[in-house]
Length: 387
Ligand code: GLA
Image (cartoon, rainbow, N blue to C red; front, top):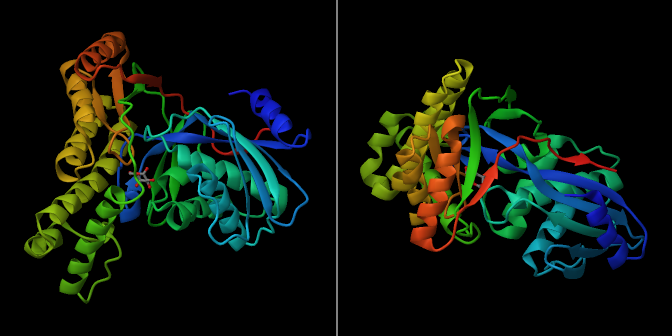
Protein backbone atom coordinates (compact mmCIF):
# COMPACT_ATOMS: atom_id res chain seq x y z
CA UNK A 1 0.00 0.00 0.00
CA UNK A 2 1.31 3.44 -0.91
CA UNK A 3 1.48 6.44 1.40
CA UNK A 4 0.40 8.66 -1.49
CA UNK A 5 -2.82 6.74 -1.86
CA UNK A 6 -3.86 7.36 1.76
CA UNK A 7 -2.52 10.91 1.70
CA UNK A 8 -4.47 11.95 -1.38
CA UNK A 9 -7.72 10.83 0.31
CA UNK A 10 -6.82 12.53 3.58
CA UNK A 11 -6.23 15.81 1.74
CA UNK A 12 -9.38 15.49 -0.33
CA UNK A 13 -11.77 14.59 2.47
CA UNK A 14 -10.62 17.06 5.08
CA UNK A 15 -9.16 20.55 4.97
CA UNK A 16 -6.38 20.01 2.45
CA UNK A 17 -3.66 19.72 5.08
CA UNK A 18 -1.47 16.66 5.60
CA UNK A 19 -0.89 14.80 8.86
CA UNK A 20 1.35 11.95 10.01
CA UNK A 21 1.12 8.47 8.55
CA UNK A 22 1.23 5.25 10.59
CA UNK A 23 1.12 1.58 9.65
CA UNK A 24 0.39 -1.64 11.53
CA UNK A 25 0.30 -5.19 10.24
CA UNK A 26 -2.04 -8.15 10.44
CA UNK A 27 -0.58 -11.43 11.67
CA UNK A 28 -0.17 -15.11 11.06
CA UNK A 29 0.16 -17.69 13.80
CA UNK A 30 2.24 -20.80 13.22
CA UNK A 31 0.75 -22.65 16.18
CA UNK A 32 -0.89 -21.96 19.56
CA UNK A 33 -4.55 -21.24 18.83
CA UNK A 34 -7.03 -20.25 21.55
CA UNK A 35 -4.21 -20.54 24.06
CA UNK A 36 -3.71 -16.80 24.64
CA UNK A 37 -6.73 -16.27 26.88
CA UNK A 38 -5.85 -19.55 28.61
CA UNK A 39 -2.47 -18.25 29.77
CA UNK A 40 -0.60 -20.44 27.29
CA UNK A 41 1.90 -19.85 24.48
CA UNK A 42 1.39 -18.50 20.97
CA UNK A 43 3.72 -18.34 17.99
CA UNK A 44 2.68 -15.46 15.75
CA UNK A 45 4.46 -13.16 13.34
CA UNK A 46 3.40 -9.89 11.71
CA UNK A 47 2.76 -9.94 7.97
CA UNK A 48 3.56 -7.47 5.22
CA UNK A 49 -0.10 -6.51 4.93
CA UNK A 50 -2.02 -4.28 7.29
CA UNK A 51 -3.59 -0.92 7.88
CA UNK A 52 -2.25 2.54 7.07
CA UNK A 53 -3.71 5.72 8.57
CA UNK A 54 -3.05 9.40 8.19
CA UNK A 55 -3.97 11.38 11.29
CA UNK A 56 -3.85 14.97 12.47
CA UNK A 57 -5.15 16.93 15.46
CA UNK A 58 -8.00 19.11 14.16
CA UNK A 59 -8.05 21.75 16.90
CA UNK A 60 -11.45 20.74 18.33
CA UNK A 61 -11.94 19.54 21.87
CA UNK A 62 -13.27 16.11 21.03
CA UNK A 63 -14.65 15.84 17.51
CA UNK A 64 -13.26 12.99 15.44
CA UNK A 65 -13.73 13.11 11.68
CA UNK A 66 -13.01 9.71 10.23
CA UNK A 67 -12.92 8.41 6.69
CA UNK A 68 -12.68 4.71 5.81
CA UNK A 69 -11.08 4.87 2.37
CA UNK A 70 -11.88 1.30 1.32
CA UNK A 71 -15.52 1.61 2.29
CA UNK A 72 -15.83 5.23 1.08
CA UNK A 73 -17.59 5.92 4.35
CA UNK A 74 -17.29 9.08 6.45
CA UNK A 75 -18.34 9.20 10.10
CA UNK A 76 -17.94 12.13 12.51
CA UNK A 77 -18.44 11.63 16.21
CA UNK A 78 -17.57 13.08 19.60
CA UNK A 79 -15.33 11.28 22.06
CA UNK A 80 -17.63 12.54 24.83
CA UNK A 81 -20.66 10.78 23.32
CA UNK A 82 -21.18 7.81 25.66
CA UNK A 83 -22.77 5.66 22.94
CA UNK A 84 -20.05 6.25 20.36
CA UNK A 85 -20.49 5.77 16.60
CA UNK A 86 -22.58 2.91 15.21
CA UNK A 87 -20.42 1.95 12.20
CA UNK A 88 -18.36 -1.03 13.32
CA UNK A 89 -15.13 0.29 11.78
CA UNK A 90 -15.54 3.64 13.56
CA UNK A 91 -15.95 1.89 16.91
CA UNK A 92 -12.31 0.82 16.71
CA UNK A 93 -11.28 4.47 16.48
CA UNK A 94 -13.64 5.56 19.23
CA UNK A 95 -12.65 2.63 21.47
CA UNK A 96 -8.91 3.00 21.12
CA UNK A 97 -9.12 6.78 21.66
CA UNK A 98 -10.97 6.26 24.94
CA UNK A 99 -8.58 3.50 26.02
CA UNK A 100 -5.57 5.72 25.27
CA UNK A 101 -7.20 8.48 27.33
CA UNK A 102 -7.47 6.02 30.22
CA UNK A 103 -3.71 5.57 29.89
CA UNK A 104 -3.23 9.29 30.40
CA UNK A 105 -2.94 10.43 26.78
CA UNK A 106 -4.78 13.77 26.45
CA UNK A 107 -6.56 12.85 23.21
CA UNK A 108 -8.43 15.75 21.59
CA UNK A 109 -10.31 15.98 18.30
CA UNK A 110 -8.54 14.60 15.23
CA UNK A 111 -9.02 13.78 11.57
CA UNK A 112 -8.19 10.33 10.30
CA UNK A 113 -8.33 8.53 6.95
CA UNK A 114 -7.26 4.92 6.72
CA UNK A 115 -7.08 1.99 4.32
CA UNK A 116 -6.04 -1.62 4.60
CA UNK A 117 -4.72 -4.46 2.50
CA UNK A 118 -5.06 -7.20 5.08
CA UNK A 119 -8.08 -9.24 4.00
CA UNK A 120 -11.12 -8.77 6.24
CA UNK A 121 -12.53 -11.83 7.99
CA UNK A 122 -9.61 -13.99 6.86
CA UNK A 123 -8.38 -14.62 10.40
CA UNK A 124 -5.37 -12.35 9.87
CA UNK A 125 -6.44 -9.79 12.47
CA UNK A 126 -7.44 -6.79 10.46
CA UNK A 127 -9.06 -5.45 13.62
CA UNK A 128 -5.86 -5.65 15.68
CA UNK A 129 -4.06 -3.93 12.80
CA UNK A 130 -6.51 -1.05 13.07
CA UNK A 131 -6.29 -0.82 16.84
CA UNK A 132 -2.51 -0.80 16.97
CA UNK A 133 -2.21 1.61 14.05
CA UNK A 134 -4.59 4.11 15.65
CA UNK A 135 -2.96 3.63 19.07
CA UNK A 136 0.46 4.30 17.57
CA UNK A 137 -0.85 7.51 15.95
CA UNK A 138 -2.62 8.81 19.06
CA UNK A 139 0.41 8.05 21.21
CA UNK A 140 2.58 10.05 18.82
CA UNK A 141 0.25 12.98 18.17
CA UNK A 142 -1.13 13.54 21.67
CA UNK A 143 0.98 11.48 24.05
CA UNK A 144 4.63 12.23 23.31
CA UNK A 145 5.04 8.50 22.70
CA UNK A 146 4.99 7.90 26.43
CA UNK A 147 2.65 4.90 26.32
CA UNK A 148 4.68 1.69 26.17
CA UNK A 149 4.24 -0.92 23.46
CA UNK A 150 2.69 -3.34 25.94
CA UNK A 151 0.17 -0.76 27.08
CA UNK A 152 -0.80 -0.19 23.46
CA UNK A 153 -1.30 -3.96 23.08
CA UNK A 154 -3.57 -3.95 26.12
CA UNK A 155 -5.45 -0.86 24.92
CA UNK A 156 -6.17 -2.68 21.64
CA UNK A 157 -7.42 -5.73 23.50
CA UNK A 158 -9.56 -3.55 25.79
CA UNK A 159 -11.07 -1.93 22.69
CA UNK A 160 -12.25 -5.37 21.53
CA UNK A 161 -13.63 -6.19 24.98
CA UNK A 162 -15.29 -2.88 25.76
CA UNK A 163 -16.49 -1.58 22.40
CA UNK A 164 -16.59 -4.46 19.91
CA UNK A 165 -17.99 -7.40 21.89
CA UNK A 166 -15.08 -9.82 21.40
CA UNK A 167 -13.52 -11.16 24.58
CA UNK A 168 -10.20 -11.87 22.84
CA UNK A 169 -6.73 -12.65 24.15
CA UNK A 170 -3.58 -10.62 23.48
CA UNK A 171 -1.99 -12.47 20.59
CA UNK A 172 -3.19 -10.33 17.70
CA UNK A 173 -2.45 -6.94 19.20
CA UNK A 174 0.88 -8.22 20.48
CA UNK A 175 1.93 -9.46 17.04
CA UNK A 176 0.80 -6.26 15.37
CA UNK A 177 2.73 -4.02 17.76
CA UNK A 178 5.88 -6.11 18.31
CA UNK A 179 6.29 -7.80 14.90
CA UNK A 180 9.75 -7.92 13.31
CA UNK A 181 10.58 -8.71 9.67
CA UNK A 182 11.77 -12.28 9.20
CA UNK A 183 10.89 -13.34 12.75
CA UNK A 184 8.15 -15.28 14.43
CA UNK A 185 7.66 -14.64 18.13
CA UNK A 186 7.02 -17.09 20.91
CA UNK A 187 4.97 -15.35 23.54
CA UNK A 188 4.14 -16.67 26.98
CA UNK A 189 0.74 -15.05 27.42
CA UNK A 190 0.83 -15.41 31.20
CA UNK A 191 4.20 -13.81 31.97
CA UNK A 192 4.21 -11.78 28.70
CA UNK A 193 7.83 -12.77 28.09
CA UNK A 194 8.63 -13.33 24.46
CA UNK A 195 11.42 -14.28 22.13
CA UNK A 196 12.04 -13.51 18.47
CA UNK A 197 12.61 -16.63 16.34
CA UNK A 198 14.22 -15.98 12.93
CA UNK A 199 12.08 -18.01 10.57
CA UNK A 200 13.67 -19.07 7.28
CA UNK A 201 12.62 -22.65 6.73
CA UNK A 202 15.10 -23.96 4.22
CA UNK A 203 13.25 -25.70 1.38
CA UNK A 204 9.77 -24.81 2.66
CA UNK A 205 7.38 -21.91 2.51
CA UNK A 206 4.30 -20.74 4.35
CA UNK A 207 1.18 -20.04 2.35
CA UNK A 208 -2.34 -19.12 3.42
CA UNK A 209 -5.41 -20.40 1.61
CA UNK A 210 -8.38 -18.17 2.27
CA UNK A 211 -11.69 -19.99 2.04
CA UNK A 212 -13.36 -16.57 1.74
CA UNK A 213 -15.93 -17.81 4.22
CA UNK A 214 -16.39 -14.90 6.62
CA UNK A 215 -16.33 -15.41 10.32
CA UNK A 216 -18.08 -13.31 12.88
CA UNK A 217 -16.37 -13.46 16.26
CA UNK A 218 -18.51 -10.83 17.93
CA UNK A 219 -21.59 -12.08 19.67
CA UNK A 220 -21.16 -15.63 20.71
CA UNK A 221 -19.06 -18.47 19.28
CA UNK A 222 -15.67 -17.12 20.26
CA UNK A 223 -16.81 -15.90 23.67
CA UNK A 224 -18.58 -19.24 24.23
CA UNK A 225 -15.28 -21.07 23.82
CA UNK A 226 -13.64 -18.80 26.31
CA UNK A 227 -16.51 -19.29 28.78
CA UNK A 228 -16.13 -23.08 28.48
CA UNK A 229 -12.45 -22.85 29.38
CA UNK A 230 -13.16 -20.59 32.34
CA UNK A 231 -15.91 -22.89 33.54
CA UNK A 232 -13.53 -25.86 33.60
CA UNK A 233 -10.98 -23.83 35.57
CA UNK A 234 -13.69 -22.88 38.09
CA UNK A 235 -14.58 -26.52 38.66
CA UNK A 236 -10.96 -27.56 39.06
CA UNK A 237 -10.40 -24.72 41.52
CA UNK A 238 -13.43 -25.82 43.55
CA UNK A 239 -12.04 -29.37 43.76
CA UNK A 240 -8.61 -28.10 44.79
CA UNK A 241 -9.13 -25.13 47.10
CA UNK A 242 -5.50 -25.40 48.22
CA UNK A 243 -4.23 -24.56 44.73
CA UNK A 244 -4.39 -21.40 42.60
CA UNK A 245 -5.99 -21.98 39.22
CA UNK A 246 -6.25 -18.85 37.11
CA UNK A 247 -6.40 -20.33 33.64
CA UNK A 248 -6.13 -23.73 31.98
CA UNK A 249 -2.37 -23.14 31.97
CA UNK A 250 -2.44 -24.06 35.66
CA UNK A 251 -4.39 -27.29 35.16
CA UNK A 252 -3.13 -30.81 34.52
CA UNK A 253 -4.64 -33.63 32.44
CA UNK A 254 -5.52 -35.50 35.65
CA UNK A 255 -7.36 -32.51 37.09
CA UNK A 256 -9.26 -32.11 33.85
CA UNK A 257 -10.30 -35.77 33.94
CA UNK A 258 -11.52 -35.36 37.52
CA UNK A 259 -14.10 -32.76 36.49
CA UNK A 260 -15.12 -34.38 33.21
CA UNK A 261 -18.54 -35.56 34.36
CA UNK A 262 -19.50 -32.32 36.09
CA UNK A 263 -18.47 -29.91 33.32
CA UNK A 264 -20.00 -32.00 30.56
CA UNK A 265 -18.53 -33.36 27.36
CA UNK A 266 -18.51 -30.11 25.38
CA UNK A 267 -16.49 -28.11 27.90
CA UNK A 268 -14.30 -31.13 28.59
CA UNK A 269 -13.35 -31.47 24.91
CA UNK A 270 -12.65 -27.78 24.58
CA UNK A 271 -10.32 -27.83 27.57
CA UNK A 272 -8.70 -31.01 26.27
CA UNK A 273 -7.81 -29.19 23.07
CA UNK A 274 -6.27 -26.29 25.00
CA UNK A 275 -4.08 -28.53 27.17
CA UNK A 276 -2.82 -30.35 24.08
CA UNK A 277 -2.19 -27.11 22.22
CA UNK A 278 -0.19 -25.69 25.10
CA UNK A 279 2.25 -28.61 24.79
CA UNK A 280 2.29 -28.46 20.99
CA UNK A 281 3.62 -24.89 20.88
CA UNK A 282 6.61 -25.91 22.97
CA UNK A 283 7.13 -29.02 20.85
CA UNK A 284 7.11 -26.85 17.72
CA UNK A 285 9.79 -24.61 19.22
CA UNK A 286 12.00 -27.65 19.88
CA UNK A 287 11.39 -28.96 16.37
CA UNK A 288 12.24 -25.56 14.85
CA UNK A 289 15.45 -25.43 16.86
CA UNK A 290 16.37 -28.78 15.39
CA UNK A 291 15.30 -27.75 11.89
CA UNK A 292 12.78 -30.60 11.91
CA UNK A 293 10.03 -29.09 9.74
CA UNK A 294 8.32 -32.42 9.17
CA UNK A 295 7.68 -32.57 12.91
CA UNK A 296 6.39 -28.98 12.89
CA UNK A 297 3.99 -29.99 10.14
CA UNK A 298 2.77 -33.06 11.98
CA UNK A 299 1.93 -30.88 14.99
CA UNK A 300 0.07 -28.43 12.77
CA UNK A 301 -2.16 -31.26 11.52
CA UNK A 302 -2.82 -32.28 15.12
CA UNK A 303 -3.87 -28.73 15.90
CA UNK A 304 -6.28 -28.74 12.99
CA UNK A 305 -7.81 -31.99 14.15
CA UNK A 306 -8.28 -30.58 17.67
CA UNK A 307 -9.69 -27.26 16.46
CA UNK A 308 -12.11 -29.11 14.24
CA UNK A 309 -13.27 -32.02 16.43
CA UNK A 310 -12.74 -30.83 20.01
CA UNK A 311 -12.83 -27.05 19.89
CA UNK A 312 -15.35 -27.00 17.04
CA UNK A 313 -14.21 -23.78 15.41
CA UNK A 314 -13.66 -25.18 11.92
CA UNK A 315 -16.15 -25.36 9.09
CA UNK A 316 -16.70 -27.60 6.10
CA UNK A 317 -14.65 -25.47 3.73
CA UNK A 318 -11.63 -25.34 6.04
CA UNK A 319 -11.74 -29.07 6.69
CA UNK A 320 -11.87 -29.58 2.94
CA UNK A 321 -8.77 -27.40 2.42
CA UNK A 322 -7.02 -29.33 5.15
CA UNK A 323 -7.87 -32.65 3.46
CA UNK A 324 -6.53 -31.41 0.13
CA UNK A 325 -3.28 -30.40 1.83
CA UNK A 326 -2.96 -33.91 3.26
CA UNK A 327 -3.69 -35.54 -0.07
CA UNK A 328 -1.06 -33.38 -1.77
CA UNK A 329 1.59 -34.38 0.78
CA UNK A 330 1.82 -30.88 2.27
CA UNK A 331 4.00 -30.93 5.39
CA UNK A 332 1.58 -29.12 7.73
CA UNK A 333 -1.81 -27.46 7.46
CA UNK A 334 -4.38 -26.10 9.87
CA UNK A 335 -7.03 -23.46 10.48
CA UNK A 336 -5.45 -20.20 11.53
CA UNK A 337 -6.85 -17.62 13.95
CA UNK A 338 -10.15 -17.66 15.76
CA UNK A 339 -11.81 -20.02 13.26
CA UNK A 340 -15.38 -20.09 11.88
CA UNK A 341 -14.06 -19.38 8.38
CA UNK A 342 -10.97 -17.58 7.18
CA UNK A 343 -7.71 -19.26 6.21
CA UNK A 344 -5.66 -22.36 6.55
CA UNK A 345 -1.95 -21.88 7.09
CA UNK A 346 0.19 -24.37 5.19
CA UNK A 347 3.83 -25.34 5.50
CA UNK A 348 4.71 -26.62 2.04
CA UNK A 349 7.89 -28.02 0.53
CA UNK A 350 9.04 -25.81 -2.33
CA UNK A 351 8.84 -28.66 -4.83
CA UNK A 352 5.17 -29.34 -3.97
CA UNK A 353 4.03 -25.75 -3.88
CA UNK A 354 2.76 -25.26 -7.43
CA UNK A 355 0.99 -28.57 -7.59
CA UNK A 356 -0.66 -27.99 -4.22
CA UNK A 357 -1.96 -24.55 -5.09
CA UNK A 358 -3.26 -25.70 -8.47
CA UNK A 359 -5.03 -28.73 -6.94
CA UNK A 360 -6.52 -26.72 -4.08
CA UNK A 361 -7.88 -24.09 -6.47
CA UNK A 362 -9.36 -26.66 -8.81
CA UNK A 363 -10.96 -28.93 -6.20
CA UNK A 364 -12.28 -26.09 -4.06
CA UNK A 365 -13.76 -24.43 -7.09
CA UNK A 366 -15.45 -27.66 -8.19
CA UNK A 367 -17.05 -28.03 -4.80
CA UNK A 368 -17.81 -24.46 -3.70
CA UNK A 369 -17.97 -22.56 -6.96
CA UNK A 370 -15.04 -20.23 -6.25
CA UNK A 371 -11.32 -20.55 -5.75
CA UNK A 372 -9.64 -19.96 -2.40
CA UNK A 373 -7.43 -16.87 -2.32
CA UNK A 374 -3.73 -17.52 -1.98
CA UNK A 375 -1.44 -15.36 0.18
CA UNK A 376 2.26 -16.10 0.33
CA UNK A 377 3.41 -15.23 3.81
CA UNK A 378 6.07 -12.54 4.16
CA UNK A 379 6.91 -11.81 7.79
CA UNK A 380 7.03 -8.04 8.23
CA UNK A 381 7.53 -5.34 10.84
CA UNK A 382 5.16 -4.20 13.58
CA UNK A 383 3.47 -0.82 14.18
CA UNK A 384 5.46 2.21 13.06
CA UNK A 385 5.32 5.82 11.98
CA UNK A 386 5.99 6.15 8.26
CA UNK A 387 6.18 9.92 7.98
C1 GLA B 1 -8.61 -14.42 17.66
C2 GLA B 1 -8.35 -13.64 18.95
C3 GLA B 1 -7.02 -14.02 19.58
C4 GLA B 1 -6.86 -15.53 19.70
C5 GLA B 1 -7.23 -16.22 18.39
C6 GLA B 1 -7.25 -17.72 18.51
O1 GLA B 1 -7.70 -14.03 16.66
O2 GLA B 1 -8.38 -12.26 18.71
O3 GLA B 1 -6.87 -13.40 20.82
O4 GLA B 1 -7.59 -16.03 20.76
O5 GLA B 1 -8.50 -15.82 17.89
O6 GLA B 1 -5.99 -18.21 18.76
